[in-house]
Image (cartoon, rainbow, N blue to C red; front, side):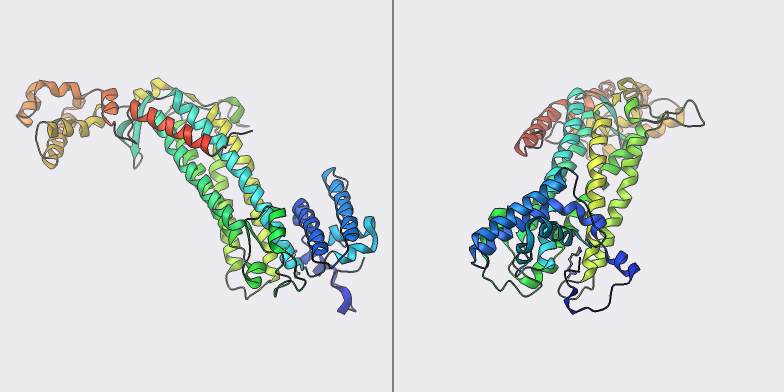
Length: 463
Ligand code: ARG
C-alpha cells in the first residue's frame, strides 16, 4: 500500500530509513486507544455533516471488526504499516472499502497520537494506583500483626530509639499514599482532549470537541491547537510519578535487604520470593526486592530520557516526540510487575520478633533518661549532657547503661533517684511516644484506622 503521505513523493524511502522511523513495533500497543478514538471521530464527522450517518456506521462497523482482530490476536501487521494509525486505516480500507479514506478528514496523526497516548496514560494511571494499593494492603496487614513488635529505629543506620515494626511498615504506607494522590493529580492534566487540533492549526470542519471529549472520557478539551499536539507534560509527569514510586520501592527494599541479612536477621523472605546461588549451596538471596531496588534506576533513566528529548523542541509537533513512547511503556511495564512482586514479598515476610527485640540496646534509652530528668524540672540541654555522661561512664566500665549503680547515678547528679532504673524498659519508651504519628501502640492503632480509611476512600482494593 502507498504511504499515508505519499502524494508528493516520487522516490521511495531508503530501507534503513523506513526501519529507523518505524514505530509500529512499540506503538502497536495503542491499538485499543487508537480505534476507540477513530470510532468517536467518525461519529463526530457525521454530526458535523462532513460524512453521512450511513458512512459513519460503515466506518464504525469496520473499526469494530479491526478492534476484534486485535483483541483476539489475529491482526496481521504488514511491512508497510509504519505506525498504529497506518495499520488501522490500511486494514479498515480492506474491510470497509473506500469509505475508509474519509475517516482522517480534518484529523492529523499529530492530534491522533496525542489523543491515543492520553487515553493509554489514563488507563495505566488507574492500573498503577490499584497495584500500589496491593502493596499498601500488604504493609497494612504486617502493621496490624506487629503493633507491639519492638525493634530498633535507625538514623544514619545507627541504632537510635526503639520503635515498633508496625511504625516501619506504615512509614512506607504513607509514602505510597502520596504516590497515589500524585497520580490522581497527573490524571487530571492527562484528561485533556487534543483531538480537533489537526496537524497544528485546528480542525476546519467545526467538529464538536466537547462531545468528543465526553465520548472518550476526557474532562475537557485543550485550549490551544499548537499546545494540543505538542504537549507531552502528561508523559513527563507520569514518568516522574513512576520514578518516585520506584524511589520509595527502592528505599523500602534496601531496608529489607539489610533486615534480612544474617547480621540483622529481623525478617525472612518466603521461598517464593527468594532464589539460591549456583555455587554456594547455603545461599538464599532476596532477589525480589533487590530487583525492586535495581529497577528504580531505569525508571529514573526513562524520565531523564524524555525530559532531554523534550527540551529544545520547537513548536509544534516534531518527530522527536515519537521517542516519548518507549520510556513510558517501559516505566509502566516495570512497575506493573515490580509492585505486585514486592507486595507478595511483603505479604509473606516472616518477622523474627525475638531478633528485633534482641537488637535493642539500653543505650537507645539515653534520650529517655534525659526525658526522665526533664520531668524532674532539669532543662533539656543539661539533661542531655548528664545522660551523655552516664553513657560515657558505662562505656568506660564496659557495662550497659542500665547496670550503673544507684551511687553512679547519684554521683552524676542528685536529680537521679533509684527510680531511674524504671526508665530502662523498651516497651514503656515506645508507649510514651503517644502523640498522633508517634510509635506507641495506641498511636499506631490510630494510624492503622486512618490508613484503612484512606484505602477504602481511594477504592484501591476493588479487584
Ligand atoms: N508515530 C508518530 C509518533 O509517535 C505518530 C505521529 C506522526 N506524525 C507525523 N507528522 N509524522 O509521534
